[in-house]
Length: 514
Image (tube, rainbow, N blue to C red; front, side, top):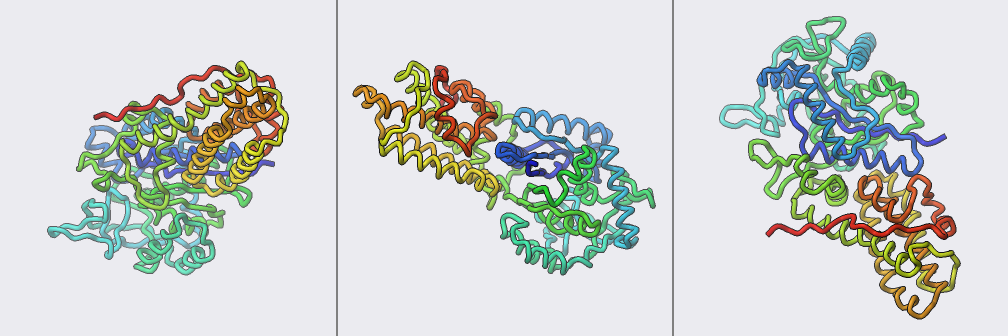
């Protein structure tokens, strides 16, 4: 039976258009899903929309729309972007689905019956934009007004609310972080969570609202709607229930990974595990909390006019260029600077000069030296060939290790190093001299080796380069689904007498605009 892998993005808040931060997270999740599938896992990939809350209700009203009209419109915009980026999710989850609403209501009732919920009075500084209570230590005061860390003005809240007894689990969550050091990536986020939240006013969580209507009604008290974060986080489980995949992918036999941006780490890494613990449900295996994408001048914001539209990027550079640059040059560990000049440089050096050039060189040499037919394979004692066998084996041995590290950036850098080795092998081997001297057997072995090496490059980058892969496979006459990277040497014999197609330019160099 195949291993199981469940990957989720956050469900994105449906109050505006997608930006490159949304694109980065979703591309990464898509690549991780595709990589796991490539090495034999059964995968399930979730993305979608968080569609309830006060901000949605207010934004819809400003735009003369009903909340449902607005969220339907925004859901289509996000789905259109994912289509353009070749994102292959298994479910586009929406918290407005009736099945999800019913599930949340059932879980609220279960928590209520377990005596984890009580009715009280909520007094707090609240950020409508972030949909969260702001601790006194985090409140920023300026000109006699109060703001959250992201600059959104806060409002005072004083209303009846249901509360969840998360304070009972303060010691449990601290011990959990201590004992499961690989739960949060990067590890540096743990100290931030403990110092800023757990050890600083870790009080019970307000989990209902009565000041607006756009949310999931609580069965026991319909004037209350469920707090948007309690609502939203349960989507990771309700979606599997909807698709009859819960037993398969939310079990101890499945790897469960949440991928998200660092500003929502608190809810996913503290409250979500507590919710699951209260309900005796499995916890995720890992939560990857990546940094922000910023510009040279700092954080992107609408007020500064420096927000980058991913649709425009795709139109200008193409899907593969955007996917590759995001996965190669942007970091999980820290904030990353997005810059078009860096994207162009990455595209030219890695895709045009390396990837495209390798496919071109391999095709060209087989066309030139063997009329486009992969020659009969026979091992020789040529030292360069022997050394290259070792290099291929070293590279292949890292495949599963790299994929299971869940860091696409590392995967790409391994491929880059291997591409450089292929080019160096060609230059050192000088096949043109062997051809001129009539050294047929050593040349044939060389051509077989570089053909397989090129296939490994194409195979290894196929989860990222969704369009280029199709072209490269056509040139190399290569069926990706039948290739066994662990038994790559079998291809040396299997490819004998196979016809290689004439090369086409996969990535045309981009000239920097003066």
